[in-house]
Amino acid sequence: MTSREILIELRSITERNIDLVRQRFSNLTDQQKSWKKDVNSWSVLEVFAHLNAYAMYYHPVFSKRIETTRYREPKDNFISSPLGKSAWKSMKLGNAKNVKRKMKSPKSFNPTFESTLVNGQDIEGFEKDQLELLNILTQAEEVNLRKVKVPISISKIIRLRLGDALQFVIYHNERHMQQAINIIENKSFPKN
Image 1 (cartoon, rainbow, N blue to C red):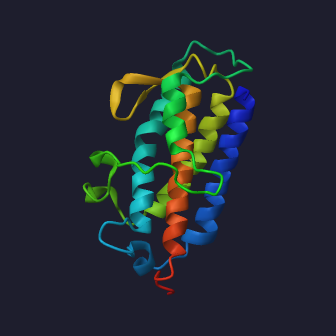
Image 2 (image 1 turned 30 degrees about the vertical axis):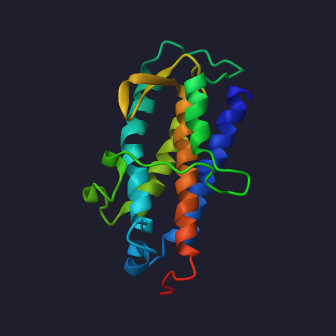
């Protein structure tokens, strides 16, 4: 894919996430937001808190790298690094909107272990973060997605190409949006 095609796809996913939040999650009651199908599951609020924790790390890093890079010439073609491709492919949903590979969240991003991640305004925070991400995607159009490097959240030493890191974060968002949809579509989910 070209850099432009990647950014168009990522923008489309992000816009769809904003629409889903507004249509399906913004009017949930407190009981609905905190409902869990079992003790090992996450609630809607926990899903959004998890996503917000990632945004809190990645969004400033993306913005700073884009702002300070000397690689100001966008390139038509984007080629993922082997590590980058592995990272974003592990997050990407299957064709049937299913999770192909389950993963454990790092404890610092897991609301089960870090209850302080949940603040009650997590859905509104996610919508705000997605709007911010649209601006980051616009800024990314002006740089070389292959040359700009981004340290990952679990190790500052390991760096991904900006194009790979954007795909990782946005496919991760999409994956957890599907998780939140699955929660509210559960037959036992409280109606009101």
